[in-house]
Amino acid sequence: MRKYNKTVALLLVLCLTLVACSSGNTGNKKNESTSNGGGGSTNSGTEVVDLNFWVPFSGTDGEYMENMVKAYNESQSEVNVKFMNSNWDNYYPKLQTALVSNSAPDVAVAHVSKLASLMPTEKVAVLDDLATEAGLDWSTFSENQLQATVIDGKHYAVPLDTHAVIMYFNKKHLSDAGLLNEDGTIKMEQTAEGFTEMLRALKKTLPADVSPLIIGSNNVFTYWIWYALVNQQGGSVFTDGQPTVNTPEAKVAMELIKSWIDEGLALPDIGDQSYDIFKTGKAAVTFSGVWATGNFETNKDLDFAAVPFPQLFAQPAAWGDSHTVFVPTQDNKEKQVAAVKFADWLASNGHMWAVAGHVPVKTTVLESEAYTSLPYRSSYADVINDVVYGPKLQNLGSIEDTILESLVEINYGMSSVEDGLAKAQKNAETILNK
Image 1 (spheres, one colour):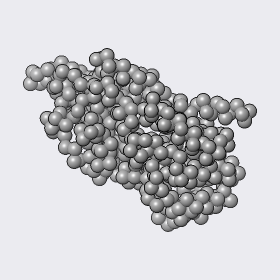
Image 2: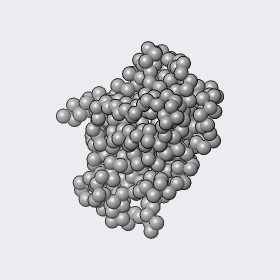
Image 3: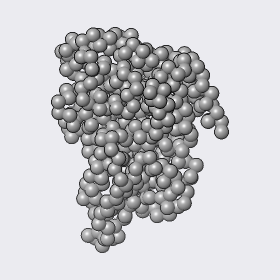
Image 4: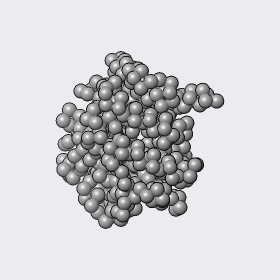
């Protein structure tokens, strides 16, 4: 059975990479859905601009975005946005096909990590001039997130959020172990060893069926946590567009993750159950995406805190991605300008989107009462500055998948840290050079 579980887990790696970001809210996928507004003409008699808007939100965040579209349509009469939500697992193939076949929507969501893969279609519009006509002010966006959307000095998308891996902890479990300060922060030395000692202290006091730490040891969370720990040491998984996987920093990071599993501080073989294990109080600490906040909130008995990913080495760093809004090229400039205005409205009303757990990208939103009054969200908003985005590579997803496969093999003891990283380096180079 053990061998079977390992095989199944490895086969699931690629699938889990695809679904991890969008499964945190419910774990259930919604079917593709559309909702249309009115259309017709405005009160002044001019034609209403209709925009087809595609999004890949399979979790409950799809409902939040649909509500935002409705609010936008009700806020003005010049533009009518038609919402179409596609399943995450077929969204990008569908989008790329639409782009190359000139059947693209007027405006669409893309992860910033996917923007480079869309560029070969030559159907992603440069937004600089359109933004000027739309009255969009780039200086109102967080610089870290804004620069992630700039390619060769040109703006290709409007940032909508940051969704990063952060730390959640069960306040009752840590309080019972005497590991909480009066201000609610964790009593621990801010080092790798300090964090591990905190887990060891938890293990001594927790009930036998509660794990000190829960992470996705066989899914994409292993890559995201490892990626953060490498960057916290001043290392990098990519240097000048080339994979630099087999490095001293990568070895230290992977040995640390493996040590948590080997010492029984984190459960192995949990599949994709880390959300549910923490949510039901069966783990004291977890590293998960910000999108899990809404999921955890649904258990009213769970007393938890959400904070940025902990700094365990010399500098802060966290894995993260961003939803962005881009505009496909087309001849109708009026639609393109309207699309940019709509994208700017979404970002400016990011407090509505933050209900899904995501961190807004405009300072005015981050400082607004509408956002700060939301529970948990503002306590991890600082992660927006810690996110280290991946390089703008067309085949970034494939490279990350092959690295993840090797990391999971290390977690399962199927490969040493040294051999696993060497294999990941070789495979990443092969994919990059295809």
